[in-house]
Image (cartoon, rainbow, N blue to C red; front, side, top):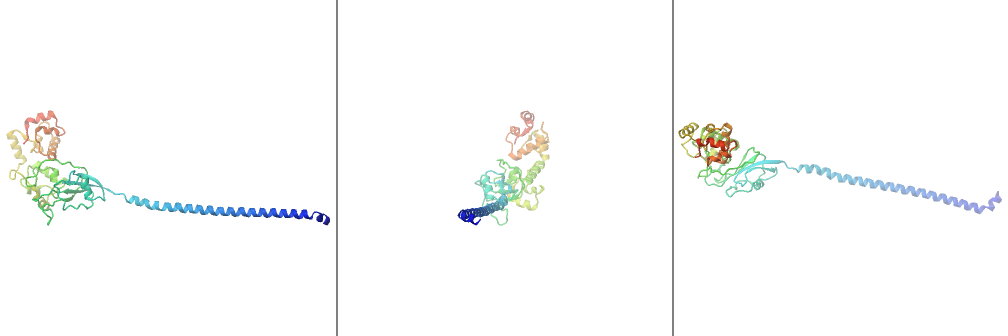
Length: 320
């Protein structure tokens, strides 16, 4: 055995060295691969954590900004503006709007507008009625201590539809509103008079005839002593002392046999051929909105009155 080992000693040592070298190489490769895999795993974990943090940071401002965007939405309000503006009516605005923006939407002021005491920087209020008064040296102040030419005032009223104004002349030469001829929009220009009270004034006038004096407005529901005191400096009752009541109107009509469609009450109009309560009311409403009839043919502007019906009543009416 020793002889064999001696004879092959070099070959055996060489073979052992090769085997040790191969084992060492394999061990080195295993540890190297394990280290790279660990490093790659750690790097992947770091990248994944960084990505999650980035997404989390992006979500935070979006979640915070969403309710802020909702809070910036403004509520819609409706405001009614009348008087000395070019386009009176009801306008829709955002609740943070100012009165000057409402005036711009209404076409701006007319040349007669009194604007000195109207706060254009004030916020509009939902359902409010803003009336822009006209310059006049004869009008009394609405507020103690306020100059007589300042009567731009704000009156809360419920309004939902635009109002069209006629161009009749209800005012006297003194610039006051004639309560015996004024239509609804002109009566609403008076302090403390909104659409409801204006309609009651007209209804009272149609039922009882002309007011003999401005003080008779106290008989209209909704007008008390304090409101009457505010209204009196701005109104007049033309033909004072010649008040025409319903009975007097009937007797004057019967003596001539004709009914004046500009002064007749609803009951008198119902006496005309083909005119019932509904048509009579439309005649009065048209007269209040558009002013006095200038000719009999104007009746054809009223729904329910055609050429045939007008001809049947023409011999019984007069336009004065």
